[in-house]
Image 1 (spheres, protein in one colour):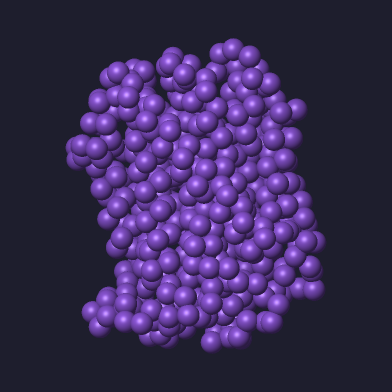
Image 2 (spheres, helix red, strand yellow):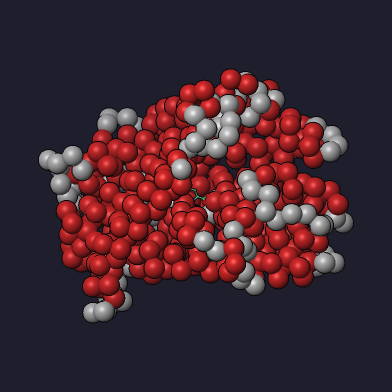
Length: 460
Ligand code: TRP
């Protein structure tokens, strides 16, 4: 077990960690991605499969990332090096660190759209279509919104673990919860909301195929911020006497609760206003503004909604930047401040093509001349390609490698010892071996199978 360097910060309390990690997990994935995936894939049936994947695979893997981070008291590269410095394994940590920044670069673009919708009365008056076109296609709007979001993110990360990340999570997560409750109340009290509740809560297994399972697993995974070292990094700021199972369990429970609540907010309103729930990624940015436009108090509720989305994205963006920053702080002479602003600047440069790919620069909105139209669907833009490469492929690949590392190189038994430290007797004689088997076999095999199926499906 590595000792923390004397100046290395830690969370101030369990609550601080749980809110910061839940803030990372709860993001666009819960409020934008989960509802449209559920809408596309059979509503309640998708939700049941999602919960199964979460409990059987993703939560055990979450514990592995937390244990790895706390054991090494370092960023993903350092945490792996603390166990095995002479093999190529630290490169997997490197993949995590790079993937974090790459995901942030386009995640911040979408987050910037949400901010634009909050300000939509300034952006463009009138029809939702006009707002959408302005916010995502006009470089004079999209670049400042995206840059401003990254600027604020870097500002919080520069403030440090306690005074930056934890403090903001403690302020913003309760606000998010209250906003969500308010909007759910408005949504379920609309006349005709019952049809939406039926769709969402009654499983329709006729829509379930193998691919739905793959989607559900991928979603559970993205939603818990797994696979690119966020949880390794956040775990590295935990003290040795913290119970990883209990605090990790809270994080997973909050993340799931918020995703389920997001469905409760969106589907009743979509059905009450006679809209289609299976609209794909535009559900939140195109369908919902229409829904808000048509309902009583809609404009106010709409502003609250996009504020909610922006806050959720903000605490996740912070965690994406923190992975790279913790690497620079641990492994180079850079100060935290310099690292946060430098990394934010790189994310901005990396993200510009994505930001300009939604109509501002036509050459960037269709890369099919470069990447073909097999992997990414017809006319993929830079943002779609980035999301596929980093948000799907790199994420899943590094997760499979990390669980192989924990299970076989570090050793599942060693990892279990780390997991047990601070728990008293929570990991019993049965649960321990089951967890080891999940990390050594079940998780890497399933997740690699998912990657292969996904790629094959896209090629064929
Ligand atoms: N979990 C976040 C969401 O649901 C996004 C996110 C933050 C993420 N950090 C991550 C996803 C790390 C994958 C890996 O929106």
